[in-house]
Length: 635
Image 1: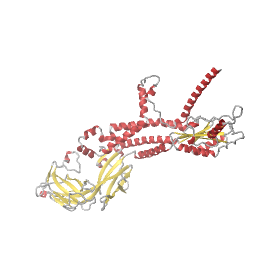
Image 2 (image 1 turned 30 degrees about the vertical axis):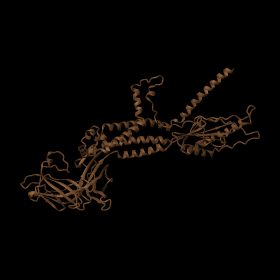
Image 3 (image 1 turned 90 degrees about the vertical axis):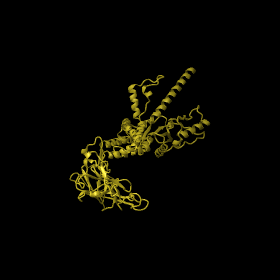
Image 4 (image 1 turned 60 degrees about the vertical axis):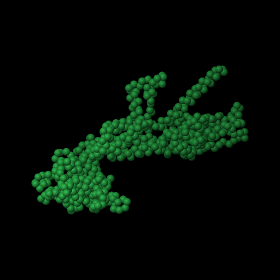
């Protein structure tokens, strides 16, 4: 019997240990899946290694599955997003062909060593380069591959109910317990009401109430990633279907939104010119005022273009004012004011005094005080004193506020036209425009032209005030500086997807805030009747991540539940010693039966120890979550 009893006892201990380990695993599984993040598996796990010493070959399918899991992981998505941000830096620092060809050419002329390297790396066309497109597409695929399975899992969690309570609630990070005279059913019903008022999803499972809250955390996470995809789609749509052009308009002139009216025009690869919005406008007046004194002298105070526009072929005339960052919006097309300058009005006459040309010639500003340079070209209508057709060219240098002779170089002292001066130097011959090659309107090609000479045989040049004229050599004619007008440069852009990008950005911020500040947590309330007829209430909470607010929230829930299930009063001591009531069976708190037979001592230190245990574990006061027993502790 002794040997058999020993074997039986050993088997019982072994079975008990296995049961405890299985229960621990079940307890951990009850709350570990609070996230829809997919589990990452290593190539070894995918190939089923572990049964032998080596790692068997995965095969093509195994490697493809492993690569797909890596690509769709959040870690790789963040890396790709970071690489995309880094890739956009060169596009901001290096001139781009899609934005300004002239700046790109100027950069190439100044950096002959870097230019071949930049061209091989496609740094002049960053946003359409192979490497930027590859990062963009991989990020797009990664986000979609990450979101689709997580969305399915999240929908499944929303349709399911919170899991039942673990067997040992004392193992959870936040825990409290007390004894009450209320019935277990009454306690569970009150717990459902309390949790429902706190917006927990709650239901009764066996002898406990299971509740969960914070689903918006994962919803915010999914919204954030969906918003990133929306922003990527909006960016791609804008690049493929956009159109952008520039137009310089002198006061009194106008613009119609057709391709032939643009000074320069660029569009996306899928853009259709038939989608140009039909509208036109006339620049009535440009108004620019500047600070005239103090340390901010010359700073613009007013910078606006007053226009008259109409929508469609027969639309009514409407007045509008275009300011910096306040564009005119017509049928989805935006007209931005981007620059301003002066256009001297000059009149050119031939040797007989006949007016050959009279127009306002826009000049290009070179500094903040609108010191301007340019060229005045007379291509048709001029004949020299011999009656032969030829072309005239004048290099022009204009300052709106001249400091005066003998006061330094000819540069403007103020952006306003307080003392305008126009300096001209004269040439005649061929301007080179008949070759059909494009020319810069602000530059004069003198390679096939001859200089007009003054009395000293030098290049004929003169500084003119409004109303003054420059007489050409040998009575070849004259050029008169009549006055000045102002011009404004506009950017007309049509870029679909801007509203979609804005909505995606707002949704991304809202989703990120929800995923950062909302905590997903579960709460269980167990109410069972003990052997002595007193109900034992246990409450425990589990969060997805550690938080100091979880014990506080559990304490608040316990306080609310105490109004329905108050703490039971302690039983009085008898003359023979303290009453050793039976402790109810509870998770981690088994009580000894009351001393009711001769074999159980009614007095002595053992009885006192049992009474202390009953008071602390399921006694007359709730145990604060911070005082919960450590994991695995049992009395």
